[in-house]
Amino acid sequence: MNVRFNVIGLPAPQGSKTRMPNGALVEGSSATGRAKHRTWRQAVAHEAHHQRQLLEHCFTGPLMVGVTFRFPMPASRPAAFKRRVAEGEITGWKVTKPDLDKLARSIGDALTEAGLIERDELIAQWGVSKIEVPAGEWTGATITVQELS
Image (cartoon, rainbow, N blue to C red; front, side, top):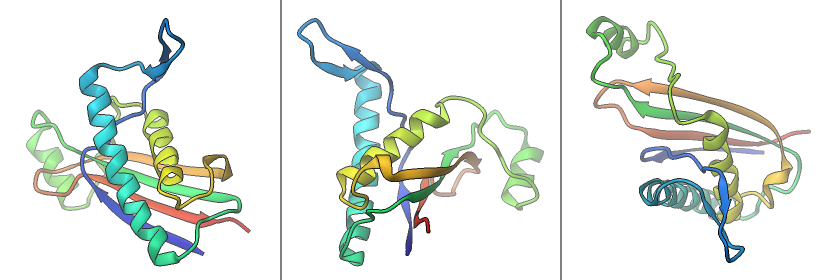
């Protein structure tokens, strides 16, 4: 069994945690970064929860999670590059921040929070990439959750 869905928005990484003097753990990024992450994670959890309701069960076995993150292409990209990406000749790989591992961590936690997967330790395989898309195309992520046999 597998499920595939899109999440519209601007992907935000889950940063490192910082221990406060009172012992509490908080995300180590700025207040703005934490707000962006919270908004993104809620969007992922909302769509994952919807998929959970459609399936009427959660994934409990070993899983493969595939994610393609879609970011807006910077205006500074050359026009010829933008055209080739828009026409599907090339892929506009994103090789700048945010880090792919921090983006993936956010997805695993949101899938668990939504109840689509029992716990994120069940993810035995990741297939994760990040691309830039031309202006006018949607940004966010395509997420696939698949049971491994």
